[in-house]
Image (cartoon, rainbow, N blue to C red):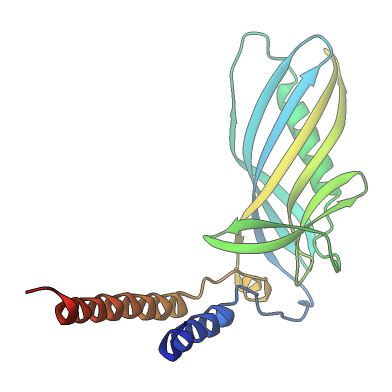
Length: 220
């Protein structure tokens, strides 16, 4: 039969566990954003003659009142081979312009499949939505564009036609004040410490209780 003390301990643990919530705080939609966004962008460029090359770059995009006005490639990495098309840089530039030209920073999103994006060391909750033939990651409170996937970008150059797939992730904002409006997942560290301490005391109390019971009933 379960003792009253055991029932009390179980009730205490359940009560504490129920209070450990990872739900983010909701904020109202910001009116406007002006600043600089930094995206990691990965491209896969291929052609029908078997040519394929992966490219990774960092894009610095300047935003004025929710509109991307200009962008720069601040880092570019790709595997150098002898059969690179002479217009490889034009292909990359065209793909990035296509992607940037179709970004709408704020869209009201009510629901969708959920994912999580890391921005400046913070875990941000996002919805995955399909819009205009693209897959987009949208922050759940504001609908802010956190990145996405764009397939079937086609570039026709002097050496042939190329198909490009692109995936992007936002990893930094300047200023980062808009992060206060994002649905950031904050682990309840203090509550976890309290719960761990209670569990430890329960275990310790059980050990002490068992020890004294053993002393009471041991054969001498």
